[in-house]
Length: 470
Image 1 (tube, rainbow, N blue to C red):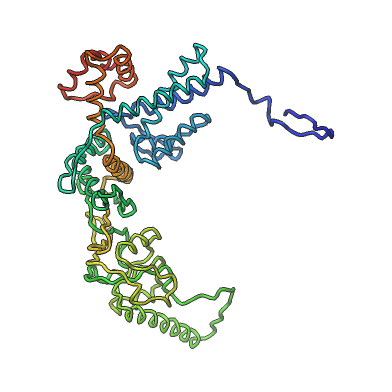
Image 2: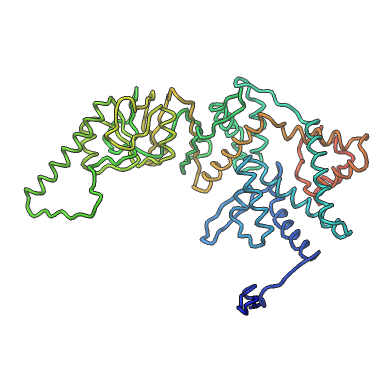
């Protein structure tokens, strides 16, 4: 422990456990940071591109996940080095802001730092290297603007978007069913998209997974799907012309706010308490009936007595609905969330064309579908799979590619961009520096732009040896 004294002779500690720590500075510190960044980049590099490989991740509890999603890989990695943590945060920020490019941004950072290391060995100051990268960024952005390709599509002609989605799904765990998954992703985005404003409300797309069945059973439902069932098995399984009330207050008698103790010392006292509860529940159900509601959706649960009375009054109910789902139902049906039961009235109700309870597969697991919501185009993607791991992976991939569809509104098709770049920069008219740059790019990751298209391969003749795995 290192200790110094101030002007008054009082000791204070500068650094605890100084003997166990080493101070690194200068070129050695810079190379240490670059090495950590290159290590993270090399892990993700093999997951990039249409030939990217999946990785098996095993946590301390033995849970297994198979994915090539860089955000998932970085999230589960136990990183200690501070610079490596910065790259993890960089990827997470890219995922939160854009929803795509999380691998590319880390691989690009690793490649830039690898080249910077060579410049440092030549004695070039880090500030000058950073300034050079800033200038190179401006050139790259202007070049992309020139060679970019515009995708034209409409709600009637979605083939360009589906093709883009299939390309991005090609390297994922769901590539066998990529055509159907791409169509689902495109239809979901266009259902909630405003093409004039080029805006998409992702909050209106609900993702729901259900283990069991096959990936082919995945479907897009026009409406909201709740992983719930009617509160009583004998309640109606299908309701039309629905008027629903959304409650965030418990469907039960109010409880005292202070501590209390109730002594029931006789049968008559118990019957009196039971009768009081029944009268309160009956009053609540009558208020629901008078408002015109024929479906109750509650954030909390009902006790057995209330549930039985709801059944007797032929009033279907759904309980234990999450807050996020409740807000989505409110937006879709036009209902207002009711925090206090006394505020229930006809003006607070929402409307829907149909609500039905369905059973998936051979299991007894049930779900509730709210369809034909007039105030919204909300959709739900119901994902099926052989086990929980596959379902979670497909849910994550679909959500990622829905965000990529939004990028397609403004950005060019990545495959066409790769074709055009190699045509422009590797042809006979390309300068030596341009050929070398393209060659270095392919050497960094030879699988990045590999394709079975013979026409494209012909354009790579000047650098064809670079594309072959070494």
